[in-house]
Image (cartoon, rainbow, N blue to C red; front, side):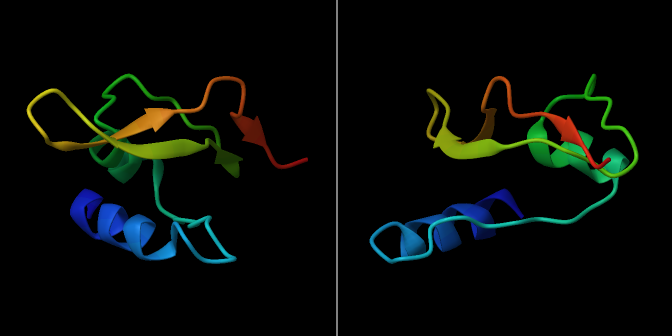
Length: 71
C-alpha cells in the first residue's frame, strides 16, 4: 500500500491536484504509518507526507500539528 501511495504521489506531483486521501480503520493505519502507538479517534484524521527512509524504503512522515477530529 505504501508503494502504491508513493507511485500515486509521484504521478501527481507536477499536476494541479497533489493530495491523496486514504480512508481506513485505525488498526490498519498502525501498519500503514509504521507507528504501532498511533491512537486515531473515531472520525479522526492525520496528515502525512510520503517519504523514504535511509534504506530507501517508503515511509509516511507525520505532518506535525495536523491531527484532528471531526466535530
